[in-house]
Amino acid sequence: MDLPEKMRAMLLDAPGKPLRLAELPVSRPGPGQVLLKVHACGVCHTDLHILDGELTDPKLPLVLGHQIVGTVEEVGENVTRFEIGERLGVPWLGSTDGTCRYCRRDQENLCEHPQFTGYDLDGGFAEYTLADERYCFPLPADYDDVEAAPLLCAGLIGYRTYRMAGEYAERLGIYGFGAAAHIIAQVAKYEARKIYAFTRPGDTAAQQFALRLGAAWAGDSTQSPPEPLDAALIFAPVGALVVAALKATARGGIVVCGGIHMSDIPSFPYELLWEERTIRSVANLTRRDGEEFLALAPQVPVKIEVTTFPLEQAGQALEQLRDGKFVGAAVVKVE
Ligand SMILES: [Zn+2]
Ligand SMILES: [Zn+2]
Image (cartoon, rainbow, N blue to C red; front, side, top):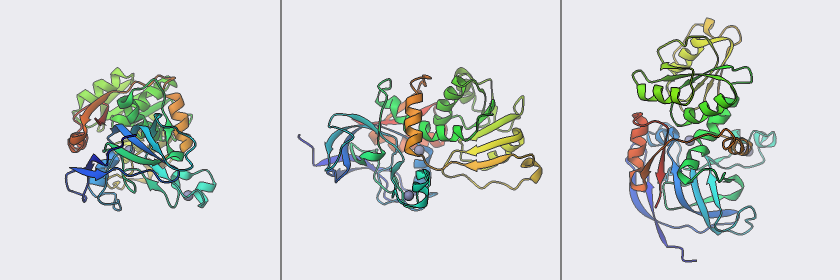
């Protein structure tokens, strides 16, 4: 095997600085690790929150990217799940301690000593990456590399968010119609729920996109839906949407915040929470979420709409995500 000594990677030196193309050594896999040749890596709002310093404790310098699709180039000692040449996906949850009270009670997403891909560990905006094989997923063959990438965070964490809306959510609002929403809207439609899509004011492209994917109604986030919602998923990092979503829900309504960071939530009268409405957040993912969602996606089947960027333009991809310049998911295509 002729593994190169060096690879190209987009490197974050410090929050607030633009990503820069760098040459880094290709690391060899340690025990339990696989070395992947990266084919594609999805772009996520979390990457922006790290870039902007809103998540305050990244490894530095850092290779961002936590929706990685690659093939195994080399395996470390004791690797048993995957073989050289196999394609797999690496998600945000890079490892856990396996021993804390959360891990022991089946909530590894809340682990007290986790390592996250593209935050504590170098991620996928690079030609190669290392991953702990226990946290990787085999990927459904129905999806090519760029289509599979957004399944790994937009899909997985979107799915966890959607599940938190509960079984009674017949009328489901989705605030922020980007990568996660476009995937989850298809799952929700498959499960016979009625979807109400809320976008930034004036973003008619995203509203049309939502209607094309089967939303019953699409409008902007300042509008009221035509009927009250049973639940609302918030994927946009805007705290004021929590209040807007509470106003839009019926009694017993559930508002689920799917992102890792949000601007402050404005104060609101208790009346909006009264009648057993719930606000909750969703943190990270468990491996079970991944297994369930990756089995479900090809059944729906979820179709992924992708805008691709070459590796050197990972920074532009992030800025376009910030500005809502495309519909669907952004993916960095490596090679
Ligand atoms: Zn993500
Ligand atoms: Zn733990």
